[in-house]
Length: 274
Image (cartoon, rainbow, N blue to C red; front, side):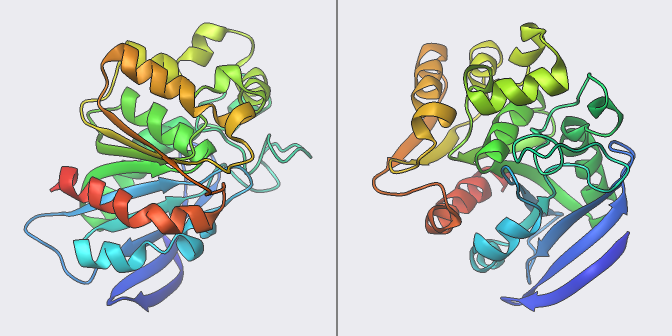
């Protein structure tokens, strides 16, 4: 584990770290905020998954989670969105390749060699946080592509994650251009495999053990074509899934939107993780 930076922030410590990943076969970078105080037992932790073109840095410097995390005694981890480096495959498109891992384990070459982000987030990173930093119960949230990752990974790994939320998630990659492009490249044309990474399909099949919090801006330019929040609202209603799906008037897809509602999400996670 290599520490790339370390800064005091609201009495806690904001670090950026790098490690060799067995899941991706590359070095992976993530940020870790640890609060100034801890309650009894291991510190609960929220993992924030970022969206297309992002790295660990976007949420770390733009979401503004540190003040509330310090107050609540929560650690917050922001991993990268894909494997990186010259040895990992890439694409000139912004929505495929490095920066666009879609939180799946690719089955198709050349992506299957390194693009194993489901395993990284669901298995390797939680074990690393527990063993190297002594962190405790885990919550999962994310934005856009990362919201898709949070919803699908948590529903498939309820034994690992205790709380769940999302900002402007891609709720049905099977039914939007971003998702169809990525899934075709990473997973091939087996739509049954696609469904294992589609939040609308999973909430009907598996559901979630608690309440899901989703915030979505009504002025988000991707709402109708890519995000399709109404499909998730319908799927939750049909499945009897407890969900607070809040349409926030006038908000867009930016980190200004996330910064506005991050406190609500952290309090949602803290209540479950305690």
